[in-house]
Length: 263
Length: 286
Ligand SMILES: [Zn+2]
Image (cartoon, rainbow over all chains, first blue to last red; front, side, top):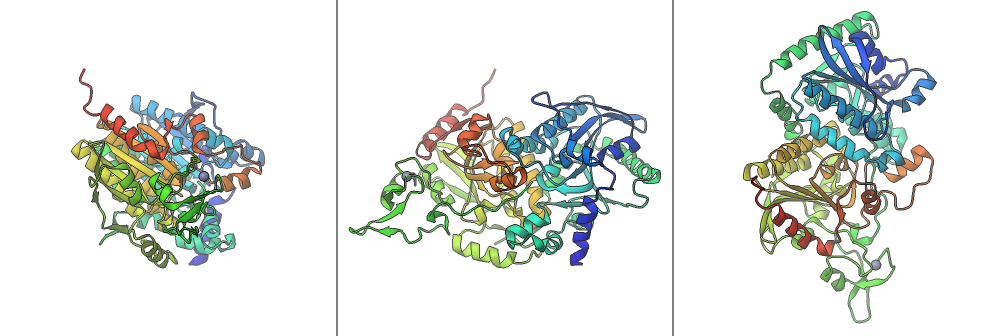
């Protein structure tokens, strides 16, 4: 059981897993990528644009890790800078304006830790996304496809539906970070992984996600077709929700309530 | 996000909230050594100056002491005081840890919420507690702050918040992460209702709190010399293998980069906040 959680972490980090762009290319048609945050630069760690899902236009945003060494370095290993989060928000606001549903694919060990990221307001950028996403008046679905590293992942996951791949993980801190802080021993990452309850099953039982996506035929046509079908169906449901924003508020409002006791 | 544990305490005042073994002067008056100017300052003098050294160094202050410093006398009415985090994940060691912290700090949780008047203007107030796991944000902290913003909407009151936090409380796992989204949504509702929110960032305001409600205020103030940042300085150094710029993540540095409205020394904060409340009292009718 202890090892099982850490096995998931390893699987979630596996270089051979499909990355954000693989999902975009295989689920949607005619993806047009849009660049830049209109403030500072274009962050290659986050990819976004418009595509067609079934018959309707949608805005798609993905954290991209890359496959080859060169790609991975170009994508900064999927660790976004503030510009990435600001680009994502810009595209989400655009989607809202034109009534397009938003679909986010999340795969990051966390928002980038660096001097430039701090100087340009990493915390503020994430905070702004959390705040603004909470009232977007179009359907938002976020799918964790690999690593869901803390605030850097949550910044694209204030959604009406959050789904996780079977072997994706979602955590407040990396198991290594947790182990080194709590037990001054990053070698205890396996214990930390089990304690943090970061697997898809854990997240579902905590009410943090709605659905676990099977990894049967991962990366194959059938796999993507299955996700496409689920997305089309769910967007239809959400489009008919007359209190979309209110329900999204309540979704997050309820999280953690049962963990609070009264004297 | 790398959650960081707060580096070594910078002064003895930070340990457990009590003044630990101050130096005794010949005439019996206890003194504190200031980590900035290295002078021994009589405790009574520090207290008379809101725990600010004559050199300008801001000592860390307990939430309840801060409430006394900021609010009109006897005006503070505490809310949600009974709420506290359980151990939702049965995280190893958490139960004992939190028990010890509760005993040492005399607080149930890492934030105190309520209503008060400042310069006779009514507001909702939350003050985070540095002596409670360094203001770590768990489910109860998120719940209390969210409830306070909701109360603010209901009563049409501004919210003033003093932040101090090392980030999300990892012992509550994903539930603590979700408090970032939950509080942010409540801040947004309060904001959309046309109501004022002022945050005062105190040392340190980092991690998940700096990536949620601390950075979402209409007016963001900070104490001089406070550490304000998302990732821990040590983690950044390890990741980038570069030395950090001078004054990195200090409030002055963050102001220079455009993320803070103003730095307000503690001794002037009450007057400053009272003036802001007054200026926002009653919305303009066009
Ligand atoms: Zn001094």
